[in-house]
Amino acid sequence: MPGRLGGSRRAAIILFGALVAAFPVQAQRAESATPRHPNIVILLADDWGFSDVGAFGSEIATPHIDALANAGMRFSNFHVAGSCSPTRAMLLTGVMNHRNGLGNMPETIPDEHRGKPGYDTVMNHRVVTMAELLKAAGYRTYLTGKWHLGSDRTRLPHARGFDRAFSLADAGADNFEQRPIEGLYDQANWTENGKPATLPRDYYSSRFVVQRMIDYIEADRDSGKPFLASVNFLANHIPVQAPDSDIARYSAMYRDGWTALRAARAKRAAAMGVMPAGAPLVTMPTTPDWASLTTDERAAAVRVMQAYGGMATAMDREVGRLVAHLKATGDYDNTIFVFLSDNGAEPTNPFQSLRNRLFLGLQYDLSTANIGRRGSFAAIGPGWASAASSPLSGYKFSATEGGLRVPLIIAWPGSARVRAGGISDGLAHVTDILPTLTDLAGVPGHGGDWRGRTVEPVTGRSLAPMLGGAAGSVHGDAPLGYELSGNAALFRGDYKLVRNLAPTGDGRWRLYDLKTDPGETRDLAAAMPDRFAAMMADYRAYAKANGVLDMPAGYTADEQINRYAFEQQGRKRLIRIGLWAGGIILLLAGLVWGFRRRRRRV
Image 1 (spheres, rainbow, N blue to C red):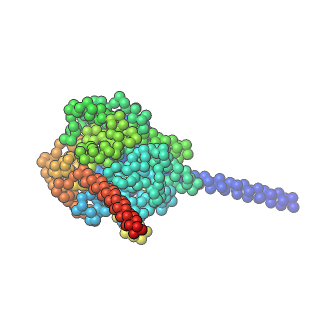
Image 2: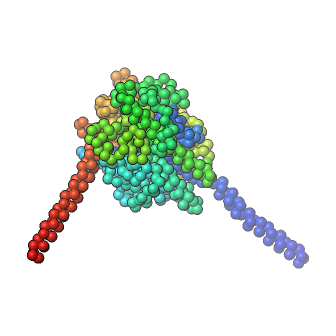
Image 3: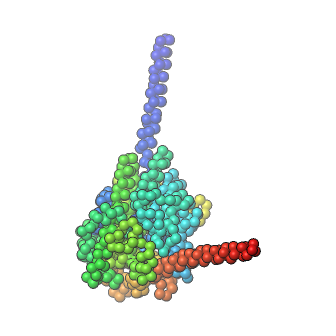
């Protein structure tokens, strides 16, 4: 009996030990079977036109962005705002721009609208950001690059839900050094976690914002939490600048001019299925005749587009470096990637006025050989901007499709919820991104109440059905309104009601069928009077609900930017004159005081 009891006791102990030893394994298996929240990477390009990505018809080398397109879904009917800040605020909040405070930007708002409801020119405190939502759900939250949504301590990224942020408060800056856009800003306002920051000596914008993001991700890796990484590139905002080797890659290209490039891109976009075959094209009235340019003018134009291509390729290379890092760390498959541009291609020609030419000539080396390099200041202008938006009409600042329709790619390599290699032609909007990501990540949103305070409700809709390959749009036939700087639109199904002010329009409302005519070449207002009237009523309802204000007579965004820049230059000159005059007065006062003192001694 004692021997049997001892044997039973030993067997029980062994069995108990085996169960204890097995428990952590079972717990680990259960834990691994529970899906972890996916990481989220937002890749926000600046001023890229609809066909600036290889997967959307470009000749520019963007292999790493194209790879994300092949791994995910391309949206060929995705819309943003005609300028950067309104888009960025809608992306972060899922709330329309007049509701989130960006009824206009600081650089483009007319004086009559300053301080009016919805025209804060910064992202207001009545909205909840994507970073705040994800942080509350246990995410690490990071941002690098352009912010442009407010510069005081309550509005910088660290105060809007980002754990770590290295950000630029301005619309743009130099890509090679800590230098502002001269004449527009006094300094390049970079901050890290709300404190003034200094860029490294070997700084190049695209390389820096990706490296800093990698550093942030790795610094907190031991937390085990998923992350939101918002990478906001300066490419390809003015000034167009790129490493020499990237510019050289395009040395044999663009000599046939912008009209030929526009036609070639339209053909490729149709062949890829992101545009309907045979879609008609318009020539913008602001597009110069290539043949009428002088030899020197053509040489400078060719060089700036080569630099533009180089700048895009340099950015794509950094996207690839980030993706390679996430593959090496095992994060890639469980990461949702979102690539988009904040608006269409930039048409502004800063050298159009003599005043600007003289001023910029004093600040930069404007020689053709230096275009795109350190110390240069260059912009592609309306001719190349029209080609970058091909086959669409218009570009940035307008409500044309070329201003509002941009490439969108969403990929989740390890999930069947996103159809790999798919193309969706259903209407999608930038306010849809936030609810899409919270839906995919399984993170609760908010219904207009956030931690006991009333906030603006999210108006976007989840694109998850479209990501899975569902035909059509999640918006169905519901009206979707838009307005910025007097340029306005109302989308409903396949149709678009639109008004553009000068220089891209004449202020008249027009109606287009975007399914067959994405280039906006055939006005259907007279042929469809009932639809036109109904959509006009929809727009008026949108404008009233969102507090849209009429623009002052003669207003254009281009002129307002020039006025803003001139005021900034004038303010700087007055300060310099004041300092100079003050120094002279102090010097004279010192001389007089010294003279009188010597006389008293005598």
